[in-house]
Image (cartoon, rainbow, N blue to C red):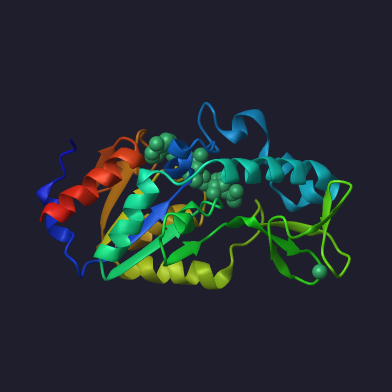
Length: 245
Ligand code: OAD
Ligand code: ZN
């Protein structure tokens, strides 16, 4: 059983303003690969070859092959107790916003409602010409490439390196970070910006910063509380503990 500090527990009142930022680590226990680390995608592939606009220009088939592979993984697996605990927390707290860098949609599947998807959603496609969006599988595939009704190519509905984040979503994320009282950074290596800047923005306005990760990150030395371990274990323990209060 995890021990949570009275400092943290006393702050977790029903009307506390809470923001949670998640990264690939929260889906690791759902058997989805993370990006960095020993088994991460960026050990076997270079981001420039798969996750940039230039990569898509050069070889759209290769890029789509990788995204289709990942879409299948997302379909095969499911949210884990970490995602479910966050959905429960949302019900428990009046002001609760979940910001995620993940594109797997598992927070939705776990029942979370207020979700800011900073990097898009892998189960969506977007037409490069007319901007029309569709669900994965609704595209018209020819020679391993998906086409929109307007005749142009679909691209995955995610944000690539070198692209800007969807502005309204980023603005909402900054706003809630700057007005929250408790900020959780969960399962992210805290190296990809602008997401990685959110904890510091929250701290500058006086928020209490909590990190959940089995490993230390560049953020760790700056947090108020580091809960070292897996999110699929710590988050269910935390919600249990809160429910005893
Ligand atoms: P990373 O792969 O960089 O980091 C995953 C983090 O999860 C690491 O710090 C791990 O220690 C931690 N972790 C591993 N298992 C965990 C577990 N069971 N519980 C909790 N944490 C665990 O993933 P992100 O930080 O999400 O961007 O990466 C940020 C962005 O970089 C991604 O959104 C993606 C990537 O390139 C784009 O594609 C634009
Ligand atoms: Zn189109």
